[in-house]
Image (cartoon, rainbow, N blue to C red; front, side, top):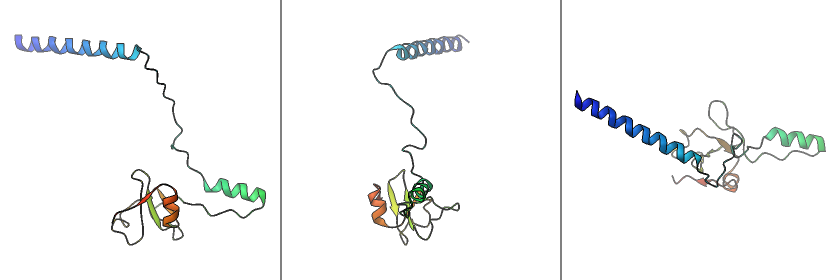
Length: 123
């Protein structure tokens, strides 16, 4: 019984010390201020806005460098290159992991994906 009481008191003191440390750390100015960023970050360009701008100016809209994947996770036939933004890797048709990759973006060719800062998969 005395051992359990001693452990309880020791745990309570440790918790109180931790709470005091956290309270003091929050009060100290750090010199760094964080601002919230818009979601998704960085902002993603929308193909519809370029089409709307082109229709107002009378020019033919240029094809988008990338497009959103289909609802089933596949890429449209016009944009067969699958890209994962978290890893920064793109997959080409016939590649080892192409079939199981759920893309974040789809590109028309490898040059467009590389121009966006992605690298090809190693296999």
